[in-house]
Image (cartoon, rainbow, N blue to C red):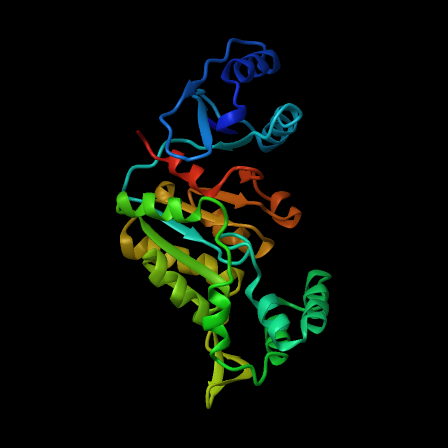
Length: 288
């Protein structure tokens, strides 16, 4: 089935049904779901087969010519016994924490240059992380207290976590960022599990190094599989959400992998992503 997400003040289910009927040359009936998102509605097309990625991409492009519509294809709705795994930076929050730390340290351009090197394939994730963190040497650890309250959750994130908590859903965040931020986020939103990188410190100052296992794309996937085993869940009851190429393995290991405001490097390898809707539309994934 396909879920269509439209802004509440700009949704037209009849026109959507007509557009789908014209495209597939058969009557297409859609159902409006009960509202669970503050600003977005959900219409469902219950079909007896799945569409290939190429068709989903074409359909998305055609529908977006008229209004800001997102779509996700799923095989079945979730029940309450589920696990949601998220990336952090640019997924749950609008910022990239290492960039914000670099601004505090006055080394943003240097860190951005390393990021560019990594994106061009000249450095792997672990090398790039170590190199960027070296520029953070001597920052006071107290910077995290100040920074955390300047971070902005993406639209719908607080509502999503409250909804998941009400359904007793397990939640996890796997981040290439830092434990100092993730521990605060875990407490604020009652997250069950986190994985992030630890910045070494001494005498309340950062040493510019990272110790322990670096959370990269492989660790994100392995962490999801570990929790799947621990919570004894079927793959179809696991949702993974991220924005970048380093989230792809995690999304592939889940039953429903979703790019959220995803970068092109991820989009070209996945079928489901959200460009416009707020994060709380993910509550529409559950059976009513």
